Image 1 (spheres, rainbow, N blue to C red):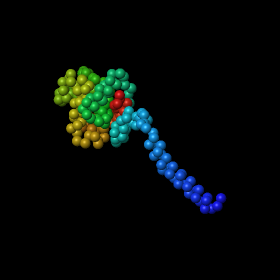
Image 2 (tube, helix red, strand yellow):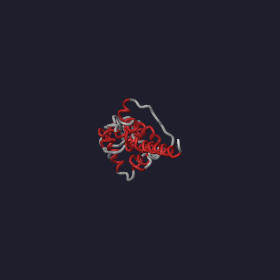
Image 3 (cartoon, rainbow, N blue to C red):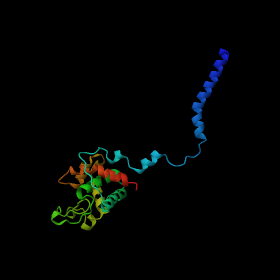
Image 4 (cartoon, rainbow, N blue to C red):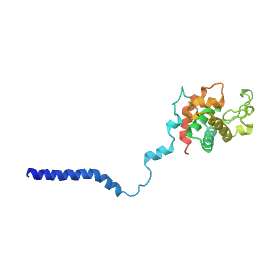
Length: 196
């Protein structure tokens, strides 16, 4: 084969290859028709909240964890439902659940007699004498969560605060750093239950 013919054949082959590379995928997608189903990555991401929204500052200090019984799980789900009802994001649920884990271990406590801190009641150990509501209201998980989150919304910049600072500003606890130890478990609970 002479040199001129060889160059012509190689040039045409090169153009065909280049055209196939650039036009092939476009042509293939043009004939594909509608796509059925969702990509796996999108479906998984939609099932769980973004962990950077749940724990934007990372956990602070050593973390505690308890096994939850059915009542505690139901109370955590009630906190999540009330948070959604209030129109607040997942981070508010994390702060609320961590606060309740510290205050009552997610148990809706009535008056504990001599072991009670004054007149503290419910999931958040709110006090009727401090204006949180009646004993009946405070021991209602939805009411107590909405009352806590109403206080949270009044904290300027709560979304950007470390969890323990946001919780302490609302609760005014004698142990202000204690809330931080529950952040990971609270985030796990919210991640597992937010979209269920």
